[in-house]
Image (tube, rainbow, N blue to C red; front, side, top):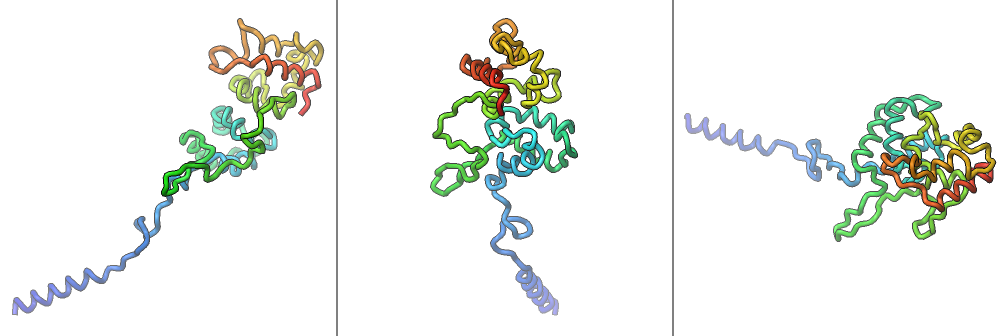
Length: 232
């Protein structure tokens, strides 16, 4: 009798093992495949579409370019974190601030390499906001759009952001300070701005900033821009 009961119990236990439902095709606990880390990477295109275009580009039009924004990304993050920016709207949500921080922590990538089986690499999500193909020469012009992207933002905004004592973040900043900074558009080469850009003893950018001084060509283009009345 005991052997018969034990045999019956073994049959029940074995049959229970086949009653569990399994989910195929999934690597996760719930049967879903985890998102590949590369596919989930935060790129400049995400920052541009979710943060810059809705909240920043109305005032900072050049932020649509990766190279321009990459040069000021840390100061922009500081302004966003403190609530100083955006200036004319509500502060960014915690989710958007976290998105920006995670992008910076990942090295502020513009594109992500391919993960093709053959090992080839390339750009799977290039930033399509930059209108200039890399094959075209990058010519500096005496306009705010050109100078802001290639000179003022990368070489001046570290010290002269919108909240600084002497802001140079917008074209309007230059207009507002034209008397003391630009000699009211007269004899521009003797203006305070050009003197500081050319100075070796008290240069701008300062030596401690680690930023390169403006080249002679860049200074000459700045002079042309001021003499022409700061064209946009």
